[in-house]
Image (tube, rainbow, N blue to C red; front, top):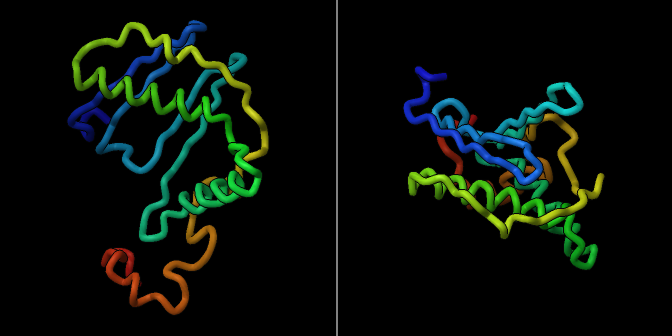
Length: 156
């Protein structure tokens, strides 16, 4: 990876409970998703999130389905909003520390706890999003109207 990535960066995160984590920014090596690995009960566990490419962007279909579920449920979020706040804030603070060239020492506003609810969010049934998850794209009868957004490399 060192030969492929010209500007390697890492954010080291130290959690209140003693857990340490890292976010690696390897732009030329990984630019279409993220991966996670950790030790849990003595075993390595891992997950990967891949953004689909091409004109469809299937991962947004699930975002839309979860927004619909949120509205229909009367405003019950599909995942605890605290999780979104914490992940977004950690990434934001980390990037700011890289830009400023300084370690961020204290973040008392991140002393947030939550309990994850299982099985509420609508997730893809496959390991990777493929094709149009909700419907054909472009919609039938509208192919010419959306023609301008389809890059040449995706045309058949």
